[in-house]
Length: 379
Ligand SMILES: Nc1ncnc2c1ncn2[C@@H]1O[C@H](COP(=O)(O)OP(=O)(O)O)[C@@H](O)[C@H]1O
Ligand SMILES: [Mg+2]
Figure 1 (cartoon, rainbow, N blue to C red):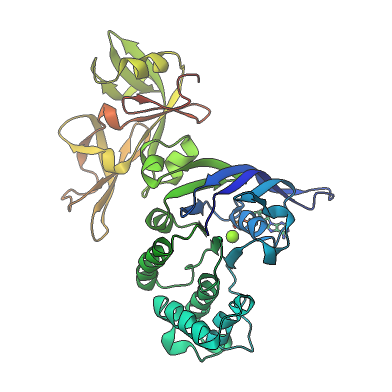
Figure 2: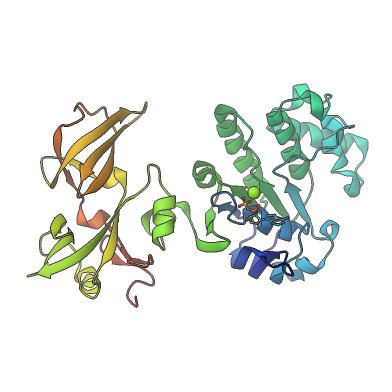
């Protein structure tokens, strides 16, 4: 039932004939394996919904092609694409109960009433909607409307499920529960899905691979682990991860194999010969200036490293966020335990060489720890 989904250089321009056309999506290409769950992740306005609506057929593709298996679906009317979509804005039929709304999605499948009931019940149980099935959309909460909208997409048989911020209206605890159930449901049935979200926790929890978008442009399409360990550029590096990666613009100075990363003549980080791989040292030597990135969880607060001064110390319930003034800016560290030190206290911060991310001054990744990045060597 499921097939590979391919987006090939898909573009969306709104008002192409207007004086100021809006370029919502640019040359977007991805290949999704059958049964894969993919998240489109990015901040508001980056083109996620436009991409989904083009796949569903509610927006015309300005340029490019979309395939499910061998079928070129971007030329077909929405009903013939084999795609089920849950919308960001619910769009339930007001005169129908939630039960009727969900069942309505099954109309085209021409099932008997017993099978329709069974499928509606199964989805209602999955989404905790059973007690509300006989109520009308206007009499239930936004979260319940949203779950009914999700149910209406999931209840259908389709080759591809498109879910636009499907849990944005839910309270955090229910969201976490339903996230787990949704993933299990998609997996058990071997369904292929594209989920749109601006919430990286949701993307990490649900998706096999995440497409990070910014300004209508795909920045990186990779697994959650790869996005964290080997971000393709500075945007992905700082967008993925909470709190965000610390970044510093530095000039590398190398002598006798020792690497010194300096800002305005002062050393921020220094590494003895051998700590940094020869390959990485070599590419740093060719750059006048680089941006180095350090994840807060990789900053070691202790008796070694560069001097810093605490500006805030927050226990957030399961870890400490420590912010310190450092090298003309700040450095944020996360510590698993409570950290007993007051604002103003002097500390030392160290970043192991194998935790350092290096980006060219224009942003593309050069190295991650001892590894040269995929496109790093040529940069
Ligand atoms: N129907 C439309 N007409 C004109 N511009 C639109 C329309 N829909 C979206 N846009 C614009 O396209 C860009 C991408 O929007 P959208 O795809 O909704 O992003 P996201 O879902 O990531 O928030 C935004 O600049 C938005 O204002
Ligand atoms: Mg959107």
